[in-house]
Length: 131
Image (tube, rainbow, N blue to C red; front, side, top):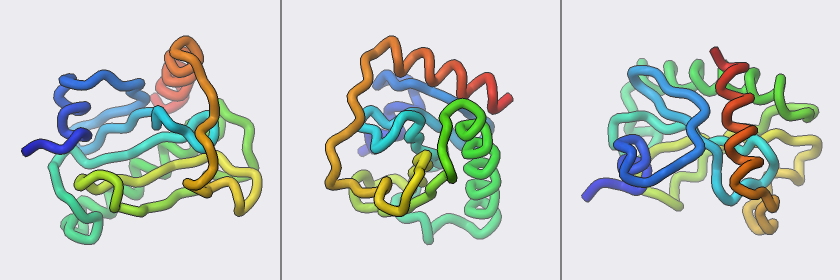
């Protein structure tokens, strides 16, 4: 059975896409820890990030770096936080979160409140900065 992320890649579930290439897909988290919180996923449905082939994992980190730098151009922050949890969805993924302190990546915090227009505008700005 396809993961929710595979369904997002296929367009079966809507998302706020910010970037894509042959191997990876990135979209805004709909329960963001901060404005700009983005998920990076491989298009290949692989559950655990450490199951990725070395070259694919390296390329995923490079894609995430490029995207993180694009997010920083759009969302003011001190750094781009990057975390891998891997328990929420059975599909490897990286969280990119704009941060200003070490406490900004806390998944117990309530999500930042954003309306659909804010998501659409932010996704477009990040996408433009990525290209």
